[in-house]
Length: 139
Image 1 (cartoon, helix red, strand yellow):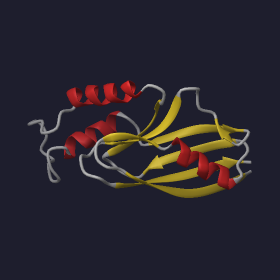
Image 2 (cartoon, helix red, strand yellow; image 1 turned 90 degrees about the vertical axis):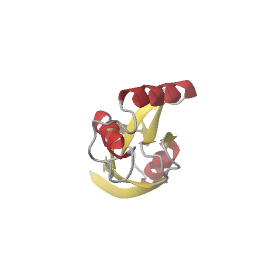
Image 3 (cartoon, one colour; image 1 turned 180 degrees about the vertical axis):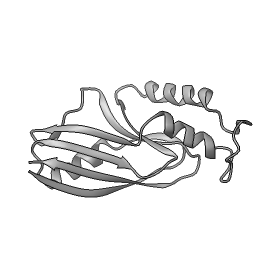
Image 4 (tube, one colour; image 1 turned 135 degrees about the horizontal axis):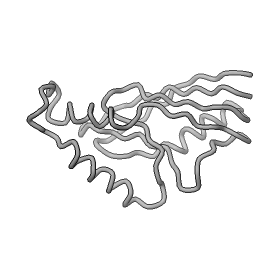
């Protein structure tokens, strides 16, 4: 059994879902991993990691529309607005989704479903550089 640790840096350009499946697969290939478990941890509190459909872009638009309704920017109930009207809504969105993923690896490949992709969901309106800790354990 062995372990590999790394980090991915993902540039975002404001609120959006950014597919990172290819970047994660490249990192995994570079380790020579064959089978085991891949863990990703997003090191931020105003963005999320998701496994979501990557075939129909309407799915991503519908997710954003739903969350815009569920957690609107500038909601008067929020006190934490230090960085603007999207500050606390970004934290709530992150709390409702996830900051880490565990993905089985077999034959050197992530065992994602046919239409699944890995996404960083940027919840802030401004561009950011998001860091993801990447850990593989296995053979």
